[in-house]
Every structure is written in C-alpha cells, then in structure tokens.
Image (cartoon, rainbow, N blue to C red; front, side, top):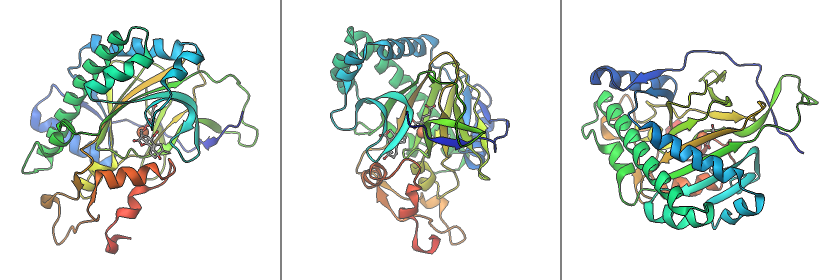
Length: 327
Ligand SMILES: C=C1C[C@]23C[C@@]1(O)CC[C@H]2[C@@]12CC[C@H](O)[C@@](C)(C(=O)O1)[C@H]2[C@@H]3C(=O)O
Ligand SMILES: O=C(O)CCC(=O)C(=O)O
Ligand SMILES: [Fe+2]
C-alpha cells in the first residue's frame, strides 16, 4: 500500500468559532462575518435540522458502505458522479477513503438511488429530505452573512444555491480504520492522508460527520487545527466562490482529513452549495471601492469548475483568476 504522509507536528488545539443560530439576529450575522473573515470556517449550533433527517441519511450511508464490493461498484461513476475509492478527482490524487458523489436535484437522486440501495425509495427519500434541510440551513447562513456585510440584496447569495439550475453536490466520505498501526517509515510525526489539503471550489459547504475525528483546518499562518467531531451539529466551510463574491473579505479555508486510525469507520456527509453553471462570479459592487479594488477577474461558475476539475486537489485554483495588479 502506498501511503502519502503529511506533517502534523505543527498543529494547535484552538477554539473553532461556534455560531448559535437561536441568538439575536444582528449578533449572529456579526459572528458569522467575523468567523468567515478570520477562519472561513465555523460550527453551527441550534441549526433547526431535525435529528431524524440526519440519522436517516446517516443510516443509508452506513448501509451503502457496508455492501459487498460488487454491489458498491454498481454505483461507479458515469462521469464524475457515483462511487469511488482511493482515487480523488481525475488527476492522480489519492486518499485512504471511499466515497459517493451525487447530484442534488430530486429527479437525479431518484434515478441514482437504483444503483445505490436495494430499497431505492428509502435512500432517495432520506437524501432528498436531507438536501432540502441543509440547503435551507446554508441559505439562512448566507442571508445572515449578507446582512452582516451590508449587501443590498440580502438574498443574493442564497438565491444562487436555490436556483432551479443550481450545480450543488452531495458527498459521502467513508474512512475505514487503517489496517496497519505501523508508524510511517520516513517521518516520525506523520499521519496518512484521508483527503488531502484543499479549498472547496463552491460557495459554501455544510459538513457533518459521525463521532470519529479526522478533519483539520489550516489557519492563515499554516498551523493545522483538529476539528472535534460533533454528530449533532454542522460545520460550515467557506468556498472559493464566496471568497471571490466578497472580494476576499471571506477566506476559503484550506482543510484536510487525516486517515482514520481509530477502530471504527469515520463517515462524513457534505453538501456543496453551488450556483448555476452560467452564473458570472465577480466581487459584489458594494464590496469594491477605489481603496478596495476588485481582486479577481470575472468568470462563470462553469469556467471555474472546469479549471478545478483539471487541477490537482491541493492547487490554489483561484490564482488563475486574480486581477492582473493582484498577481
Ligand atoms: C482533485 C480534485 C477532486 C475535486 C476535483 C479536483 O480536480 C479538484 C477539486 C476537488 C473537489 C474538492 C471539494 C469537493 O469534495 C469536490 C467534489 C469538488 O467539487 O472539488 C472535489 C472534487 C472531486 O472529488 O471530484
Ligand atoms: O471528509 C471530510 O471530513 C472532509 C472532506 C472534504 O473536505 C471534501 O470532500 O471536500
Ligand atoms: Fe473539502
């Protein structure tokens, strides 16, 4: 087995920002803006997603990854969607995980469920309910962020992911326990890569995992912080597209998952909120001024997605879209 090692010595257990959605609205929007500027990442509590909506999809995910190899492979991709193992993307990235990548529109979910489950209606029902609930949560977070930034149209961001043509995706990552407990040969303090360092290309990601640790985020000074797992709450990850729309006010956090060295599997479920392919992405006029000129050239989400899918996982994809004075 080829293992890719990452240094984990430079880590610090620090407080991850936490936002309680039940608090006073103007306070919550301020907290969200602070967290998005300083970390590009935060935990959401009192999120309003019913526990049963989460547990039904969790159970379906566990059932899927428990299936015999020949059954999970029936869900192998036609294009980039479907089941995959160890290979991440199309450009040679590897990780110690298996995954299921799905479109989020209800019709595609119903169709794809036929290769995912022996009870496809159970799977599609659970997935569609979950997608609807986390899309609502993502939209609420985006509206609060827009309010905190004093954006004129407070629904501007959320309308992008609510559009009928939105390009959002749902991903299950399954990290089985590592078979070997041998330390890495050439690096004493190294861990193996579950899902390598990257930023998410979309607007924002809503992540939830079971009780097994693995996720880490990078601070601007490149210190890695372990994110404590919390199955009853969600984490929000700001993506590159929201970074551009806010003219760099929000940061798109680099993050990674360390391979699972515990005795139980880790499973995470991510909703990646994305706009329609033809949406032009450029900083909102309210966030551009002579003192803060636009840091990015305009592009469409389709252009960015194409560039993302021809890049390696760890590449800084936004570099190609920086305004010329900013290069
Ligand atoms: C190596 C890659 C995998 C990825 C597409 C890419 O070429 C670069 C971005 C990767 C990423 C990261 C966030 C999401 O997990 C993902 C689905 C996405 O939209 O961009 C993955 C892509 C993937 O696994 O196909
Ligand atoms: O599985 C995780 O916890 C993180 C994975 C991730 O960042 C991704 O799939 O983009
Ligand atoms: Fe990610």
